[in-house]
Image 1 (cartoon, protein in one colour):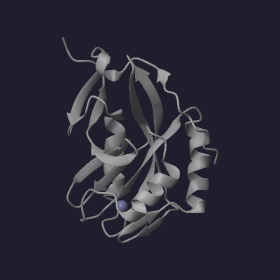
Image 2 (cartoon, helix red, strand yellow; image 1 turned 60 degrees about the vertical axis):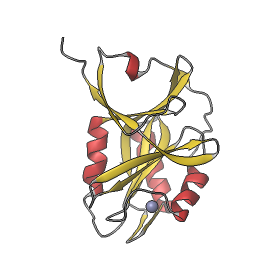
Image 3 (cartoon, protein in one colour; image 1 turned 90 degrees about the vertical axis):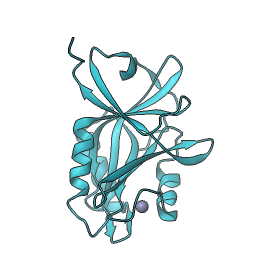
Length: 185
Ligand SMILES: [Zn+2]
């Protein structure tokens, strides 16, 4: 699939500044100089439910959304998920295969032609939230733009965590869950 090297965000009002349209729930620490991550609640549920469909092997997929900035602050939105069903799922590793990239590319072009690959997801059944050496290899190889993120889910412990680039390193970070529909007044 084509991987366009987008380096500039599109200017768009952040969900943080639209309380009339979105309710937000923050998880973990979101630093002021982080790329803020906004994930749609429905997609987060879709990912965690898919993660639970195999508790003995790792599953993975890609995060689809957009890269924006508002008032000089960059942020990414995660608006869809494509499972890499043709990836290589082992008990303690997940890899995107050539076939899985093809599958992801076809689905993305059909369903989300204007969106970006903002990151990837994979599971660590019962061994916690971190990026292994192989995970770092994948992140550096395929998700190496400053705004691309990784999501790790442990479906056994029912935990998850995001990672993002910061000063050339990949570090753990917090995120916002976005619930469409503004606060009741
Ligand atoms: Zn891993």
